[in-house]
Image (cartoon, rainbow, N blue to C red):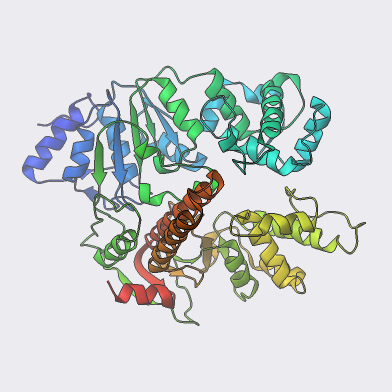
Length: 539
């Protein structure tokens, strides 16, 4: 008889080999993720290759949407039980789930929670906030006895970029305008600001998550483990990649480069930056062949074509259809918008209770704050409302939103207030009245594509603010042609123009990735707006 799983390091492998020989299946624990959801789960040759690879050297797992990534990692942790591992999860919820499912030889945390514990941040009894604001820079000017020269916005962006970057040197690449003549002054200010802020015990400034993670990167290293598993490796900050490399441990990096959607936050695809062979997972257990075809067609417009195609689950009958107005969502349906602005417009016109993934409070508080800036143009004595913003006046918000390189958050807030200022109070009241905390209470669940990552629903309805992959391909070609013409007429591109071109080209790929993420949230039915349905008809 084969050994029971987990009784020894090779017990799982011997049992898996026995079952493969007998063409049987492995009975796995109940699953709640996007993986193989039946009680009897056939192990695939791709999964076998991963489970047979010991965590004594680095390797990478390229896991397509719905391809049983979490299940495979769970089995991996229970295969190599003589090796103590650290699993770094994308967020707290995933880390909590991993603690319940993985081998007890695995410590599951987020990178921030690990650094928080090692640096004893909790003992400081200090406020930890999401990010620094312009007002913090103004306060630093007084503390440091330095002036930012009226460039507080640039200082803030430079500091933010440095905190998520690798290494200790502040360079021009951290500055919002790499070839600006003011960069030296800005970099000197940021260097002094970081030195002051990193001495956590010596000041009463707020601490940000990025600050203490940067401090950990510069002063500490991960120890006490045989290897590290890092999830969602396609969306890591450079500072975390640096932490992984400094550990000197074998890294099992798991992710999908085509689900990289957080470049606007400074995240990079670590899959291509880390070492080791690549092992693919290409069989999606979530959806059938039609949705796999849609996903592959979308990724066919990426500048870097995937090395492997997705394959659908033959047991799942999926379909793609045109979304028609008036169609009411059934149970377990997700309505997806590309932007918060489109989501806000849809929710403000709703007459039915709804749930929003991640809640509506952050969205409402930001909009209230922006609306408060608009009102205070005419009534300066009005008390500010809503969340703390980086901008002190409506004009500052408008300036930040201008141009194609404008701040995306500023663009969204400015657009919503500018368009709906006459009825904004009423629309916000409607949203707050109809919102429900419990998604089981309602049939209408909504989200932006970014917030829906990692989730799945029987049906997904995509709204009309998504552009087709063909449009993003066209824009990429347009950007490249414009750059070639500039070089022909004016010579080599300046560093600023090169940086802008790279941002534009990378953004095209990010938008294609976001389309792929959005479409692959569906299991059974994907309802598309007209432009995307026309794309589907050509496949």
